[in-house]
Image (cartoon, rainbow, N blue to C red; front, side, top):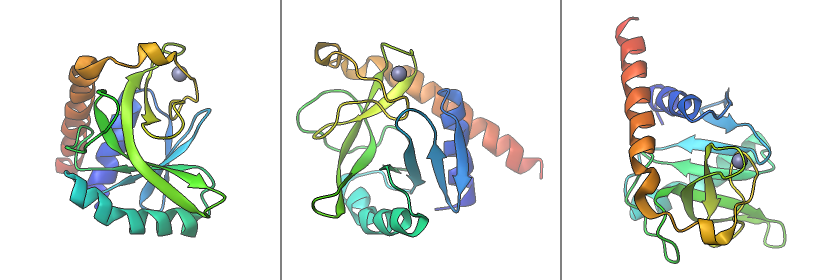
Length: 169
Ligand SMILES: [Zn+2]
C-alpha cells in the first residue's frame, strides 16, 4: 500500500472520531475493541481475497493480538455480504485461537447507539463494533444504506485534505 493511501485512511479515521497511530504501513485504530487497519487498493471481492495472506502475515509480524480490517481503495467497496444489508467496509478478520488463524468475512458499517460513532461489525462472527467495542441491539442493525452519505463525506474530506497536504510539500 502507498504512503498516500495510509495517510488518507488515517484522515478518514480521524473524521469518524477514531484515534489511530501508525505501525509500519498499517494503522492501529484504538478503542474498546482495537483493530489493525491495513490499507490496500482492493475494490472487489477477488482483490480483497488476494490481500488476505499479506494481511495475516503483517498482523503476525507485528505481533498484533486483535482483529484486522483489510481496507480497500475506498471505504465502500464492492464486497459481497450474505446475511445483512448494511454497507460493507472491507474484510474483517478475527483470530481463531483454536484454528490458529484469522477468519475473514465482510465487516459492515453501523453507527453505534452507545457512543454515536461509526463502527464495523463482523457479519459472520462477533457483532460488537470496532473500534469502540459497544454492542447494539440486533434489531437496530438493519439500517441498509442510511450511513452511506456520511461515510462518503468523511472519505471525500480525507482524500481532499491529504491531497492538499501532498501538493504543499
Ligand atoms: Zn460505541
